[in-house]
Length: 96
Image (cartoon, rainbow, N blue to C red):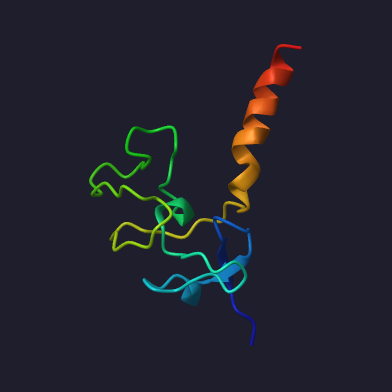
């Protein structure tokens, strides 16, 4: 029986099934919590509260497990540890 993949770990990009998003569940590959804002489809770093859901209570630490009722796993690829460097490089490339 195969597990249906519903998302990826925000930190390492590992595939996660629907049972991998418990309140105290960690990624089996990197050990980071999975039910976090950064793993949610509503997460948006360009917003002031970093959340697109207008009525959700603000969570200060986006990489810490929380009880948000609006949490929905995302299929976004993980491994964003190098993302700021990649974004900076892309911006610099625009002006070359």
